[in-house]
Amino acid sequence: MIGRIFGLFSNDIGIDLGTANTLVYVRDRGIVLREPSVVAIQSGANRVLAVGEEAKRMLGRTPGTIVAIRPLKAGVIADFEITEAMLRYFIRKVHNRRKMVRPRVIVAVPSGITEVEKRAVKDSATHAGAREVYLIEEPMAAAIGVGLPVQEPAGNMIVDIGGGTTEVALISLAGIVFSRSVRVGGDEMDEAIVQYMKRVYNLMIGERTAEEIKISIGSAYPMEEETSMEVKGRDLVAGLPKTLTVTSEEVREALQEPVSTIVEAVRITLERCPPELSADLVDRGLILAGGGALLRGIDRLIAEQTGLPVHVADDPLSAVVEGTGVVLHELNFLRKMASAERP
Image (cartoon, rainbow, N blue to C red; front, side, top):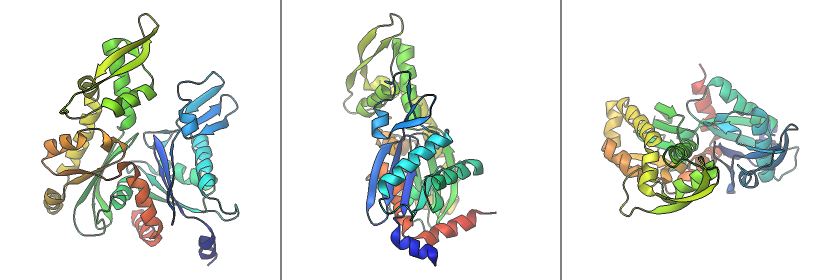
């Protein structure tokens, strides 16, 4: 009864706690926050100086006294205290009611994480000011967010390519029939570009520059019109700043390994698919969500490799958090899922 009364006064919140970005959905208001999962702290004192967009601008550009860090690695918490501080900042920013009424929070987590990692997420959210914390697996949230009929007895396949992980899941009757989580995503693609520039050109670039290259000219499939861009970095031989031109073919070559890992995860999931659900996928195909779905031509590559129709979600970056928003209105569905998971 008390919980119901509190529910009237608090804003229920859905959080997509991503390796690269954190998105927050507030019930009846929609997506209210979309910021990088980066925290700038004072080294030694562990005092938080900036969170989100402001902290991301400091990445790779800080003096010795300030450290800009990403507290999540491969979709899981690498630094508990900093994650808690980041969550507290985001929850306070969107939860503008009185402090005595704490919100209920749904957090989307990768499907491959351990019980210990799940407990870390729950504890972080609780310490950051949540009244109740529910977890939902990212592929399930993404499938709900893109509008797939997850409660029907039919095969739905979602590929969620995030910053730290790629989640491939086959969903039927509101449950995950089979899922595969690989710790490869946008970050791994950025790192592949950094290593390629170092190996081929002896040029050292930062992760922000690598991300800009990926967004501007990155692709997974040959483009009709190949492009190029200027890249600035440090020459490893001379030790001086240097500018050179990189083509989209070279970037595609650099991205070959992480992209192949994602395609392989899709193939393995399809191989484990029961025959009846396989038949559904021939007509329905599969949906791509997450920031990695925006990589040019990745849908064409997966379609070519699998022979299935591949569709990119209308707003792939928001799919997971939109799913948590839908579930906020149906907490009974989430409680049912949570009880089904318990041994």
